[in-house]
Image (cartoon, rainbow, N blue to C red; front, side):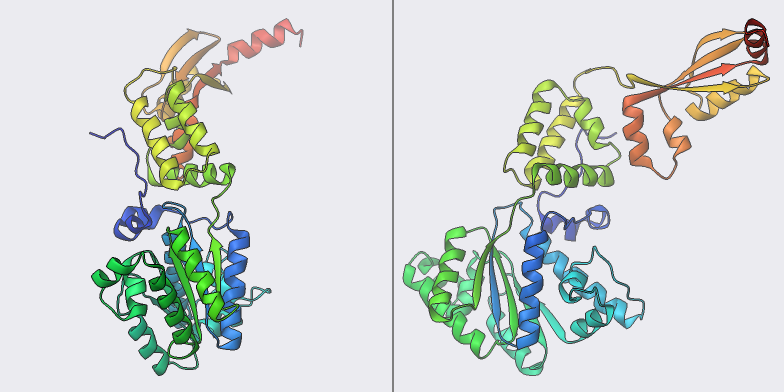
Length: 386
């Protein structure tokens, strides 16, 4: 029994918690070239000068903030492990390699940067200021990366204000509180927690923008505000399509093809709009759910024809049975030849390592196996006067 639903992450946290998602989901970086270049320059600035710098990064839910933070952290520790095992190679899909390798993809620079950098995920830790401060005292010469995800939550401001989370939540909307925590951040970044790259992410644009502007009034150039961009429609479709195929037995195009006109239109509108990744995955999921309850257009509507010349037509029966796993349909038979129609299994038999591609092809095509005997060849040659 299977449900008419596809597997996809509603939130980035699910990728950490679900082994199938963690292993199968592919994080794409291609749609963030300018933003990744900004991250790269920010890290180099901190590593070279041993001065603090903060990125106040805004993005709506589902744009990929937590995914980005997890990617930095995972790739950093994977690199550290590879260095310990002495099997490190430059990986263009490793975000830490991109950030730390300079402009020549220098593997030695990656090693040096990794061994001289510490990373701390302070998200949801109300004691993060104290923890980073103690950490700075024990590793004063190392560059530090501090990730503060979901900074709109009380832990971030409460840690800076030195109060508990309920007390901070009660005062958060007061403008003087934002000014206070911004001033505290600048003071601490100059002293107790200096030499750190703070990656502050959240979905409250007004709070993050106000925090950055207030910090700038205290120390120009210490904090930058940067929205995390949505990908283009084309990039979004590519990311969703590939991950649907990687995570599910049913292919993306099968979900789309078998859905009705209304669901196709809704998916198209979602792809063209400013919708985030979960919204787009959900649109594909809805299309697949409808596909299970409607007949739709016939599957395998297109035909691939394979012509086989043989001495013995009995061999063709074996070939058709093998390609279809016994599910071929004999639609014509004569001494000159035979025609078998195969709707399923032929791609999975021919392409055993390409399950997603096989399912995608079989959802669109049937295989028509046209077998021609020696008699047909003789008759053709006789007619052509050979």
